[in-house]
Image: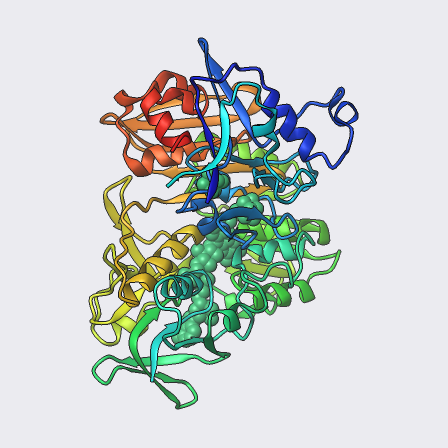
Length: 145
Length: 408
Ligand SMILES: Cc1cc2nc3c(=O)[nH]c(=O)nc-3n(C[C@H](O)[C@H](O)[C@H](O)COP(=O)(O)OP(=O)(O)OC[C@H]3O[C@@H](n4cnc5c(N)ncnc54)[C@H](O)[C@@H]3O)c2cc1C
Ligand code: SF4
Ligand code: SF4
């Protein structure tokens, strides 16, 4: 399956991936309108310290502990992609407790359902916006063995 | 003859179906359960009462689950005994169902200790099943004064579920703090203040001495008027199908890391079992949904001839009350580190170069990074422990470990 891979060697710490992610998932078609004066809560997030930086998003694990532990069945595996049904999710955060990478998180919505990277397959972008937006190819989307 | 027979229709049972089907696409599966409903998420019964879900959305798997997985279901049927010599189970209606491999995922039932005058209370409820939730919902009115005995997860989830629909809720518990199984004293006080701010009243280190029809006299001398009583004192694993035929049982059914019982071709999963907690290195009942799933799936794979082990179980819990979120995991032993920054509460427990357990209240972001340290027994000297104490982050790992996480 095609997955997102991050190489910290190339990461500039520019945070553009975060903005592209927030835009792709905003449901709006104008980037300025979508992001201006908004505190973004992207599904890919940069960690940085002492000149090191890298992006973290869902690994679409082969052993997805989030899916197995989900108390409602809101998380599922669809053709290898770990998807969330926000209609079923109740925001219990058992998946936050389970994910070893810290890659699933509460969303901004009032009911506190979780959000995670779904490879932009469900939004209008159709393919990972973070990958396209990364100016230095520190995030790639490809098939490995 | 059915190749696989599964008793139960909740998390452990569903995990077992999915485990079997990951190996064997066609072997006949028969699933038998007392509850008549489509598989549903038990923890959601409180969300149902406060309107945050409905019966359709609380289904644990889709409407076509049994069909898609070729499961013959026998719902509303109770198994009364297992004959492990003849390899068949006997139902209450007299029917017999033969098996090659058997799964016991019978869960637990409420435990009601003897209490003086309890039989005088007419409106008395437990809070474990969808039917319990419906009965309670029918009984409550905006005038109801509800008494809940038990300040554990189930009692307090019940309180949250009905708080907006009743006049008052009083909770009594023998323990000196609420949620004693998952919280330390300070953490418990934080959550208690929050729940109290929603109007729920607590009597702790106290218990009911005698019940009258609408009154409870507590040991402390306090008297509580009520018209609805919810008993959430504790649960008891359903082990009799195994203990009756000489299978090994302590508090729960004893299982190994392949989720086998001590009896040939019989497996068990979920709240009815006891398994190994790697954080404390002891065997215990870990009555939690993720654990039930993992055990069920592991058993299913093994029942179908695969080879799976579940050898990194720990107690772990994510739960929220009135918008305040709590995540806890592992065992609270060894040295501790506490942080109360920004109104949140966090405590980490560590010993012998390992993270043993943690409590997070309020800010629960990325908690799973801590959970993983406990489960994998990661040596703390191999990471930047000072950094990860501040907040869960992958930056605290070595560059090599990060490459493993993110680039592979
Ligand atoms: C109110 C509430 C809130 C909860 N919240 C959480 C939470 O937030 N997070 C969490 O991790 N866990 C939570 N739990 C615990 C969680 O629900 C259980 O861990 C989980 O349901 C265990 O699944 P199980 O398959 O072992 O058993 P159960 O869910 O108990 O199911 C047992 C099944 O076996 C059937 N059965 C039993 N005996 C027989 C028999 N003799 N013949 C036929 N059928 C039989 C029953 O009908 C039932 O279908 C909560 C529980 C409750 C009650
Ligand atoms: S959310 Fe976490 S556990 Fe789930 S698939 Fe993604 S990385 Fe894996
Ligand atoms: S927060 Fe939502 S997706 Fe995560 S475990 Fe709970 S119900 Fe499932």
